[in-house]
Amino acid sequence: MPKSQFFPEKLISENFLGQLNTLYARGYEPQLLLSPLGFEKKDGSWINRLGWGPENIKWIQENPESLSQTKEDALLLRDKSVVFCGMGGSGLSVELVKKTYGLENIYSLRTTDPSKIAEILSEVGGGYSNLVVVAVSKSGTTKETISHLRFFEEFFTQKSLDPKDHIWLMTDPGSPLEKEALDKGYELRYIQLNQRKDVGGRFTSPTTNVFLLPYFIGEDDIDFQKILDLGTDEIFLRLASFLYSHAREGRDKLTLIAPAELGFLPNWAQQLFEESLGKDGKGISVFFGERLDETTIKPADKNDRVFLRINLGDSKPGEKLFPYLNQKGYPVFQLTLKNLHGLGGLLLGLQITVAAIGCLWSINFVGQPAVEGYKRATHQIMQQIKGGDRINIPDNWRTKSIKFQSLTLYPTPLVEAGILGGVDLAAGQAWEVYA
Image 1: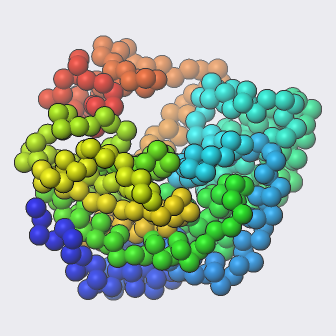
Image 2: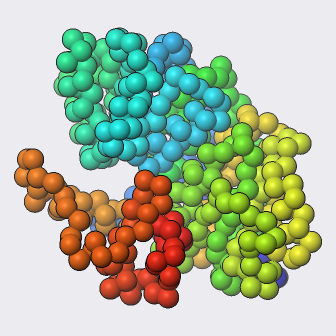
């Protein structure tokens, strides 16, 4: 076992949390470890992306009026059907709130699949006069969100409803979506309560309107002090040290065991960990929802996983598996929430965990080069497509395909590039190949 797994001395000696607080709303300071790692480089300049941390919660506490508009909006929307159109962290945050607190009147639209849109509209039903669509995009240029916006503009018009009465836009100041809201008379809301632009998508929970607006639709109040106390607990620095130490020795597969009440949390955590840390051959993969027992996992001495169990009150998931793992010497860690109102603190704590791993491993945890890369590639392809054209799968890809539910993987280009090798593609399923 790694000697340092429960002893985050470096994080304490480097004053990690102190740096996180010091750099809140500050410029690039090269003498601080967090300066390059928590900043995103754009057009030759370093842009602060640390606006999500503990100091932001303190700012909200000191400026309670910043929540007034959000609470008013939530009261207005409680009796309506609300579709949040947002990709990545925006959509995942809404879905997490919906499923954790059982909010049946809100929907998270994270795909352009017509069948999913039709499914939501079918559930809404009626004449749609009670439907509100909130399009969320930090940049104001997200292709999928803009396509959702155009669809619903046309949809409401066809239903003889004024889009201005049914469409809200949520974005950052200065974005094209802000201009569109002002030009067309749509309701405009900013993602951050302080109207700054220093929080990236996967860090929008629990302190921005992406999380707070759907939250207040279902709940009357939120205790930011509890979020702060739980999220900055030293246990998350110990978790970061535990995960980092094992990942460096090849145990880089984090298996999340969560209670049913937090069933969507692993989906949210997967994006946070994998997009933040998966760079330069480093990273931690997140697995969940598997049927695991002593017969289906590798022996402890050949194991490449670590196990994180999240307890909720007296409820402890994996009641049979977890004691077995502990007894046999598998790397295990536990977190405990008293109740579901601790969700915000847990999200903040996991974000701090990821940032701390980034510092220990020298990973810029706020950038997303792979995401930006596929956005550029998609944009190039879309520019080449004319109206009415279809994107067809190349014939040489069709020689092999692997299916898992609605997912189809064409592995030929991955094999030719040397990314996949030694994998039994005939026997494997798509999710196994990705893993």
